[in-house]
Image (tube, rainbow, N blue to C red; front, side, top):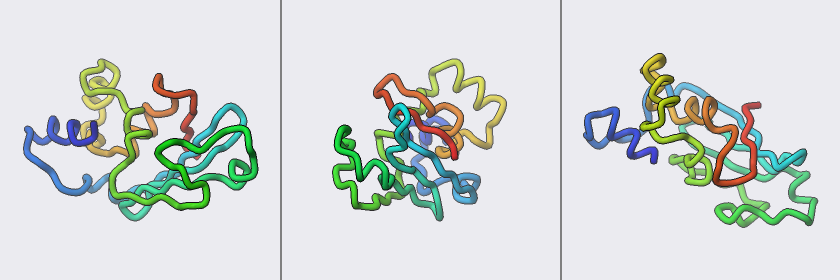
Length: 131
């Protein structure tokens, strides 16, 4: 989805890296399931980092996410994982078109789009909140 967004906003020319406004920001999100903070998602130094919370590691009722099976591992990537990127609506959706028309510099800022549109997802029951 992110690559599709990049192609649309760069006239279908392949891009490398992230936009400058994306590189210069840091974001911290909490991934929650009801009242339990499962883990944190950070965008820092041009990398996405996901790790489970200590409370999640100690509980036994909820299994780890399929994309992040090891609760003791710190996951790191330059590209946002599909579990999170799927929370950003398609650019065909009116609400994202309206947002991008008002904030064109943020059209490639994945962290900002996740902040604005990613709190809830139809794909899963988890809530992603900016900390």
